[in-house]
Length: 317
Ligand code: UT7
Image (tube, rainbow, N blue to C red):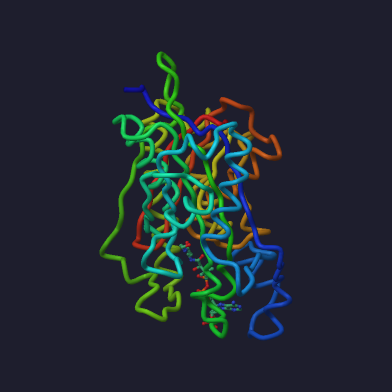
């Protein structure tokens, strides 16, 4: 048994193709000013036709493994949070494990859309606490460009592709856990506010319903995550929320009462909304740029389709 787990290292991957707001305005009735003002996105990355969710997950996981010092042979669990897997079976996690040469791990995908990384991180943490895993790969990966209707300006300007991965390991005996208790939940009565329905699906969103829910109901949940971790929001070094809209992020930040020195991730400006990949992508970039000191408390908070939410305070690797 172990007291808990920690993120040993992170990695991320984004496709090389950059699509700007002006690019979208060539084919849609939209413009750069509307997208920047109402959403906060300036550009996004879109995968190539032959680039899959599993490809992006593998690239991100390879980077996380290389940075962690842990080898594929040590990994005993692979969890992929995604709502855009091309295939229903095999799951993405199994494909990732095969590509990385991980011999016989527990493998499963988890779909809670945009809150997926926090759900998957909590699930891996719980498995480690229960002794069912020692080193887990926890990945958020999405190819939302596959499920976007490129003629629908209300969604096409929002969503994008990418992946972020964490190596999550048991803390050594006698050391404190570095992943705080999860708070997770949902608002099933609003489930139809964001859908990817059927076999050949498109994302459909009643944006204002999701926006109102996010700006009115989520800040107290984020505060509760901090309480469960025994930390005041003002003590956080960084806040990494789901990257859907800068106005939503600013609203939650205002109500949470973060320190003016706290770093607030706004990766959506350059990456768009990558659903389950958005939190690990943004966190991995903060770590890569060394913007948050190792050991500093960081609040992760995902929310979206379902409507689901989940968060935890982690210690920065
Ligand atoms: O990641 C999953 C969770 N999702 C979210 O958290 C998203 C939450 N929702 C939002 O972020 C916002 O609701 C959106 C960014 C999706 C939309 O912003 P909004 O301020 O709620 O816009 P709206 O839907 O109220 O539309 C305002 C106007 C409408 O025109 P009229 O009816 O006022 O003439 C829309 O037709 O903006 C129009 N519009 C656009 N105009 C230019 C909608 N999309 C566009 C566009 N370009 N792409």
